Structures are given as structure tokens and as C-alpha cells.
Image (tube, rainbow, N blue to C red; front, side, top):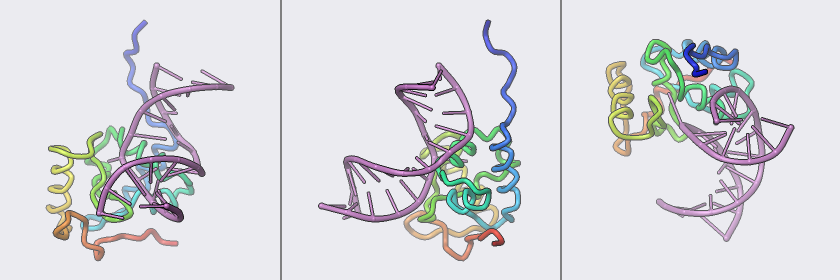
Length: 113
DNA sequence: GACATGACCCGCG
DNA sequence: CCGCGGGCCATGT
């Protein structure tokens, strides 16, 4: 029979969503930092959890960018409309960008050690 | 359980 | 600078 019920977040995903929620407005973190904070050695696995985030933008996954501070992805896309939306959300939180599209480093938020 | 996918990262040539 | 390969690991088929 076909699947009708929607899948609930796994514990791992909840861990990720909970961590992101601690990133303040106007700041960004990275997939790598996020992974380190929750004790995950796969940055990619963190990206996977965010890619399917059903609570965006309440759970502010738009505040997570790549280690080189370029945008990364949003709503399952790595470019186009979706990505521009991510940039707009950040702009509205007063995050500033450099000419090459990367986030200005002063907005980087590091989790408490 | 094996195999494939992916919003990542890093080193090397 | 750019592509390629290796590493890491949660999820889905």
C-alpha cells in the first residue's frame, strides 16, 4: 500500500534543528561548526538533515553556510530562486555580503566551546 | 544488509 | 583557479 503518513524527524535531525535554533539573528554558522557542536564527524550528514528541514524558516537553516562562507543551499536547491531567497532572508537580518557573494566574516557565530 | 545519494570539507596536482 | 578523489555518515531503496 502507498505511504500516507509523513515521516517524523529522527533524533539526529532534532539534534541538528535544536542546535541551529541557538544561532542568533544577524549571525551565521557553518555546516562544519554545527557538526562539531553536536559531535558529528560528517559535515555532509548535517547538510542532509537541513536539506529536508520541514520547519524552514522557523528553524533558521538559512543561517548555515559553507566553511568558505559562501551560501551553500536552501530548500533543496543550490542555486536559483531558492538560494536568492536565502540571501534575502539573511539580508533582512542585517547580514552583509562581500562582492563574491560570501558572507562577511564578522557575522560568523561560533558555538560556545 | 548492500548500494546509492547528498544544502560538505580537504588535500593534491 | 579548477577538477578529482577520499573521507565522513544519515537516509532511502
